Image (tube, rainbow, N blue to C red; front, side, top):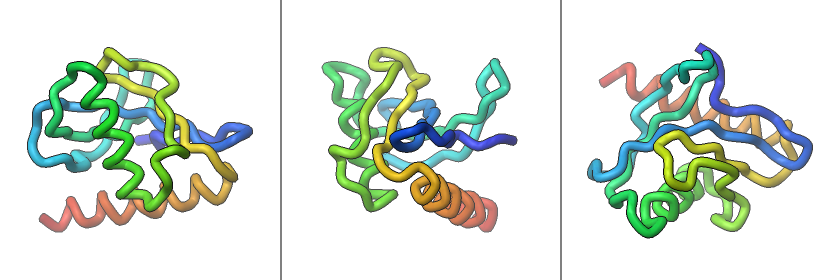
Length: 112
């Protein structure tokens, strides 16, 4: 399976699939999109109403990745389960950080 992270000139693009109204917020793993690209699956407690799930997604990932919330933005998918996020910063360093975070998450999930 590929990576949900792709380097851009000004940061990293992240493909995400959210499952709203799931408690608590957590990483569920990876999945393939129909086009073959990998996406990060995230469960959220908030309902998909009034932008609450999008706000929770950004806050959750900012905490997980230890980055400021203002560095994360929604590029597409505001009213869809499939979302594309942008994490601003130096793309190479950020991608390495995110890939290491994901590997640790997936390794922890496989031990359960």
